[in-house]
Image (cartoon, rainbow, N blue to C red; front, side, top):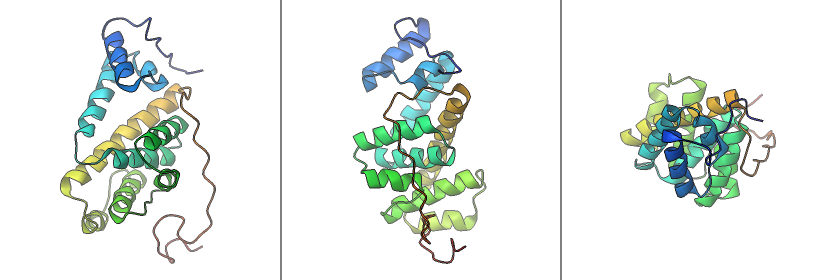
Length: 197
């Protein structure tokens, strides 16, 4: 049971009702995360506007889902892992791409660079180096995309932390646990020296 109550959309009033009705119209359901956020219409509206604005950015939906998966894995957010695995599948990510995103990797070089930058943002709390940014740029990530990586990571941190506080009940198929991989490139760096014990 959620530590922050979830609002029943049929019982909601005012701005919360309006926002929850909009969510259901768009998604066909009202996820528990948004029902918990609806305790504060300001929080739910901020989330929806931030997410909506990023949806109009340069990063495609698949990439945004990969970022959300990488951040959720790093923050151990079972709710967001489950939600974004389901959403990722619905927008065309394969099971392998979903698994790889959770480990901060991708087979496509540009996507890999974006996920590597995402992982560096999380690990370094935003204090990425010139070399980190240079590697992303060398892989074809432009300035707008770099800005959107930061914004999408921040949005994911917000939902991850909200779920940690609320202990939101998962209302998506529960994401599978990742198996521990003991290979030399398990971190996704593809550099035999990097992960050597």
